[in-house]
Length: 556
Image 1 (cartoon, rainbow, N blue to C red):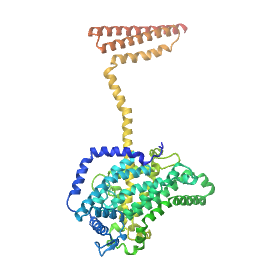
Image 2 (image 1 turned 90 degrees about the vertical axis):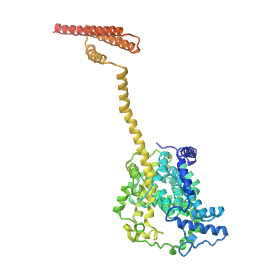
Image 3 (image 1 turned 60 degrees about the vertical axis):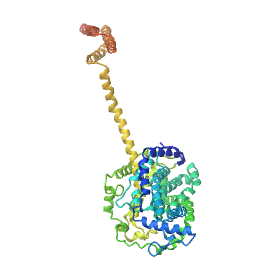
Image 4 (image 1 turned 30 degrees about the vertical axis):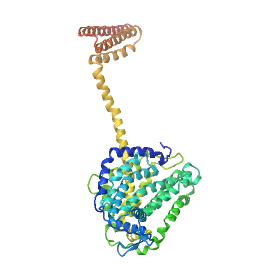
């Protein structure tokens, strides 16, 4: 059932309390390892860390001297800083270093401290982003937990291995902003019906909150330009999914009445309406990033020059090997270990494709706000688009370069989009699996465990074998006696009544015997009396049957 949509701030006390509890119980070892990592001498491991450290050190020197000629002479023949594709992380770290002072040693400590901070903050960002996407609290918590296990065969995705093994420091910054930006965009994009009518609480909230997705979009773009492009593609997927849902909700009756041209016109009208609704987000984001985006775009011919353009990272992967890697777990679980995330993602995908209305268990509104069904469909759409872009030039050929700003983009970078979609679907699959296990355990307990427990308790405390035999004998006789008429019926009833009275007296005797107040000799007397009563009752029943037979013979 749909639950009222609540703001992320309502989850803040619960998140803080659980975070504090988790930090107290499990965070001690992590903090000790983090402290040893920060205090260790030398630079952090990773291919790209050397270039990031040199850029931060050069920019910090320029800021400390008050120079605005942002030229970096440390890489190749030198280049202006506006040509870099990650200005926000470099600028913030350079400002911190300029404020603290010091050289390369101080920078390495500061750099590793920021890495640890990103590692600790990213799960919280994924929790908040999933809540904004429309997932329930349990799915969002699973996503935050499973993020640290994300690993591909080249350690190049959104997991912590990309930062600690490959040195993708700026991608880790974008990994903090990306789920929040995507969630805010999904929350900002209402259903088509709300935009069409102009009524609904979700539309009012969307108009009020357009600054938040714009700010998060700008932060993602300034942290890593590739994640900014991926976020733009994801927003397009959100618009398409919203349009498809709007067409499905409207129904096919009117469409069949007016024909295919009417349907195409409605699709185009809904797409235009949703795109126009998102326009303030994109325009304000470009206005914030104009000081960097404008010179960056104007100098695109001077960028690129990737020297390994025949490598799979640039060209992409053929469809068959890519399918084996996706299904074999190398895209989410690495080359070693059990493919847990891949299996959970398959559960989430199957639940999305073949699930029923019980999928809608998370956030939502009565006027059609975001819910788990839409979040799952959006994640599936992002997965399809990311896989197509991940296939790259090896499958699409030179047509891949016609995508804007993709002439020098490595196709392998879209492993990030694949992992974003699979991570959310794996969290959904984990939630479904855990709920299924708990439900199965409850059903098994209700159908098997409890009846068995009651049976053995009754055998231990209750009825003996002689009582069961007496009951089985009395019931059919009683039924036959009550079906007869005349004096035989009265006699049979008296006999059955005597038998029931004998059983009741025996039950009282058994209960007194269980209480321990009767000695063995008294028990023997009670059993003897009970047997005599049973024999008397049976004789009465037999006498009634004989009288009935005699009456029937006389009538004949």
